[in-house]
Image 1 (tube, one colour):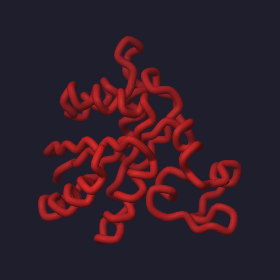
Image 2 (cartoon, one colour):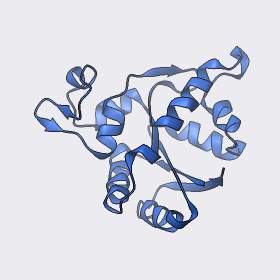
Image 3 (cartoon, one colour):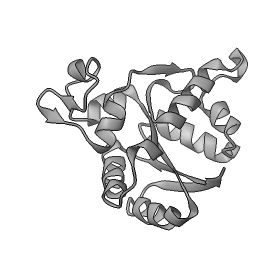
Image 4 (cartoon, helix red, strand yellow):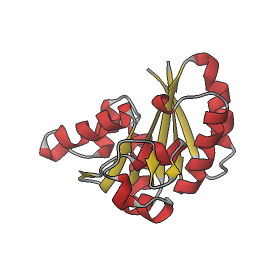
Length: 166
C-alpha cells in the first residue's frame, strides 16, 4: 500500500480533486482529510446546524457526496498547533487522536504525522498549510491505483503532493 498526501490551498481545489477520484472508482473509505473548522465552514455550502446532528448522507433536502460527505458529518477537535479542525476518514481520526494524546510537550499535528512516518519536512509543510487555510488530503491505495491518484491530484496546480510507502 502507498499513502499519497496532497496539501490543497483551498477546500474548493480539494473538492474538485476528490470528485475526480470518485469518478475513477476510488471510495471515500480510502480517503482522509484535515482542515481547520473555520475554513471548512467558510468554504462549504452546508447548513452546519443540521450537518452536526444528522447521521444520514442528507443535510436538509440536499444529498451530500464526496468531500462534503466526508467532512460534513464530523465534529471539530482541537489540535494544539492548528486549532479546531475537522479530521475526516479513519487515518485522519487516528492522527488527530494521536496529536491530542502525546505528552504535552509533543502534542500537535506535526509530531503526530511524524509518528506515522511522514518526514519532518513534509509534516511541517502540512501543518503550516492547514494553519494557512489549506486542506490536507491523503488516500491509501495499492500500487496499481497510484498513477491515477497522482495524475488526478496534479490537476490542481498549487497542490503539494508526496507519497509514502506504508
